[in-house]
Length: 283
Image (tube, rainbow, N blue to C red; front, side, top):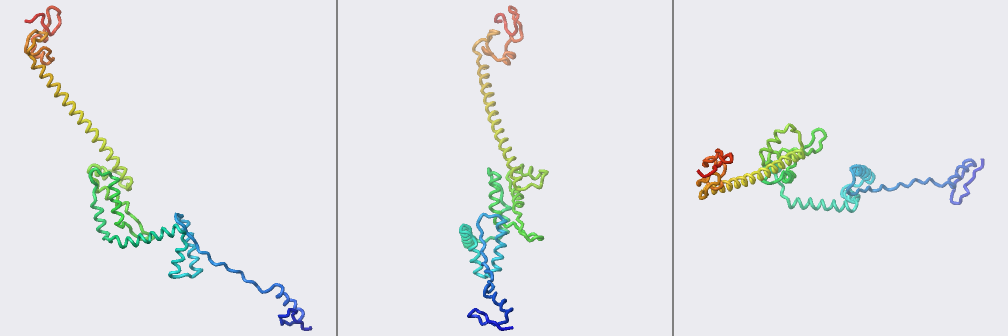
């Protein structure tokens, strides 16, 4: 079989006829072209997203770090760049506030803060909601959290502590006893607020009612005193003769009580008109 060379000038390939046919396909199809791999796109995150958005971002960020193998300070820079402008600005502001707090706020012993909380009491004329707001402000530095032994997540039990401290610090002992004596001992903080507010409202209403009754009692006493003085003055007016008996000594217009005691005509019948309590003529 004769040897045939490749007709392409730059190609020095020679072979037998059959192999030449196979070789010719190299010049028609060209070398194999590998697929171009696109670079991994950096994920992005915005503010006010959902928990689902956050989970998706973490998954994308993990893939991005593994693919790019970015580490150290570069990883922090890339993470910042994932944030939209609003979120990046808020994040920077929060970091600045934390730094300011470290310089401006003196760290206190947590136990001291808790003792202060348990010693707080409701002020006179202070509503239970206002008292609760003061308690909540103090409880914010008490760190009422504990790690769950099962899942190791932080459990916050501030609301339970506030419920107990609120009950202990009530200024009205009757409301406090009613709360402690209530059959439902599994109430939450909001239910305690509502219970105390209802009791305080009833106390205020009863106080206003008693005040109005006291005013009415004073007014009635004043009227009785005035009437007694008027009757006394009438009783002392003995200068004129009484109409029914014609005698002096018990006044011209005596009351029934005075007439019954002092008037000789009381209970006697007139012989002229046959009516009682007066004489026909002065006797």
